[in-house]
Image 1 (tube, rainbow, N blue to C red):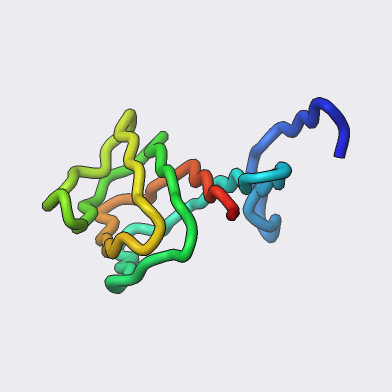
Image 2 (image 1 turned 120 degrees about the vertical axis):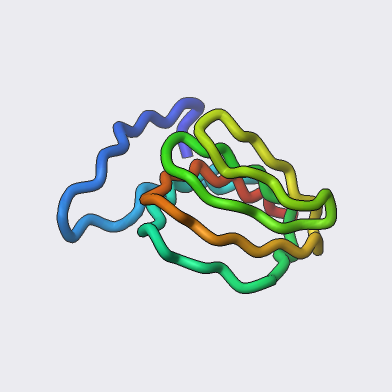
Length: 98
């Protein structure tokens, strides 16, 4: 890995979701279709979510959170969460590795 990595993200038909791995984190752009439901789950790592487009609802220990552009969420390792997406949604996900 170099001291600086640069990527331009834009998904076209058939392209894989953009991912950039660092030394202690993985940054990923996630595009979620409207009507998608993510069942209650957790991760072994800390996770940050940034909503850049779309609409949905996240359930977590903090309660119900509206997923709208500008929403930023931090989930501790092991924190449960679930979500429903009412519109096509774009998330930037940062997964911290241990």
